[in-house]
Amino acid sequence: MKIAILPGDGIGTEIMAEAVKVLKALNLPLEMETALVGGAAYEAHGHPLPESTLNLAKSADAVLFGAVGDWKYDKLERHLRPEQAILGLRKHMGLFANFRPAICYEQLVGASSLKPELIAGLDILIIRELTGDIYFGTPRGRRTATDGLFPGTEEAFDTMRYSRPEIERIAHVAFQAARKRNKKVTSVDKNNVLETSQLWKDVMVEIGQQYPDVELEHMLVDNAAMQLVKAPKKFDVLVTGNMFGDILSDEASMLTGSIGMLPSASLNSKNQGLYEPSHGSAPDIAGKGIANPLATILSAAMMLRFSLNQEAAAQRIEAAVQTVLQQGLRTADIYSEGTTKVSTSQMGDAVVKALAA
Image 1 (cartoon, one colour):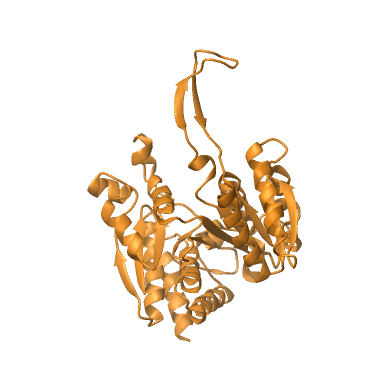
Image 2 (cartoon, rainbow, N blue to C red; image 1 turned 45 degrees about the vertical axis):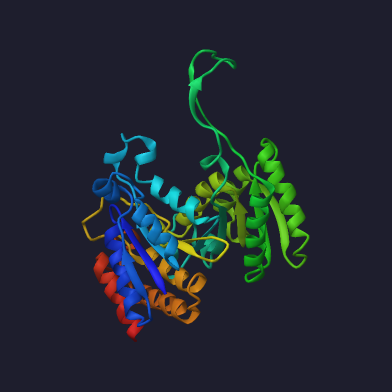
């Protein structure tokens, strides 16, 4: 089982080291090869996604990704910025389905900014379409306006687009995921304003008829944003487009107390996937040994489950994470009075110890 290890920038190298440590402790036949990506790759090769890194990712059974980005690259041309690496991987690997679970662990109920009764037992899954929408719509860029309110002025534009096949395939993913959970799908769009969203809703209704055992509801994105704060446990599987999914999944992640706890998976039609924590590279805390590695470790568990068919090993990692939380071990982002603050590496060591037990 070949895994491409792409640590990236900022805290990416620190959290990845702990995830690799945990994977090695499983004693599985894993072949792990590391490559540069993001800002680190730009410094070495002049591009955030060198051909050698892309080829490694495409040839691997799965990719474990850290994080990319740093403020010092903000003045680069857009196609050379570290974040373009993740967009390039999604495009070239056909990673169209993004799984973003938002789970509130019992031990961390007090870390959320919401009342405990609202988030205790929270377990929802956001499925974000990952290769369409304004991220990849064409044309993109700037021009001089010839009409509108201010003719002759500079304007910027991105085109939101979706095709029927793109919506159909993410719909099937959502309904199939719901069948393994609580059999409810909430499709989020903005069909009262956007023609793209009307197509999205129409296709969701059609595909939903093939899954009569799964309840389908529709919700406008602004209402969904409110309901995630007001009554988050009303959701089970929430499926939406690229831009809305980007925003809503980050909102949902903070319901749990820390984005440092939440993994993600991006899959293509062959179940080849890229797995990464939901958070970013956090250059402000890089090198301080205080980053939370649990989201990356849990992403490794998702990798074992979805791409490598190692369900038992995935469950072992998840149980080990539960154990260290039960023991009261906390990195700075989830620390509270009465718990024990540990470093990034100490948290990784604790998970390895719990695995052995």
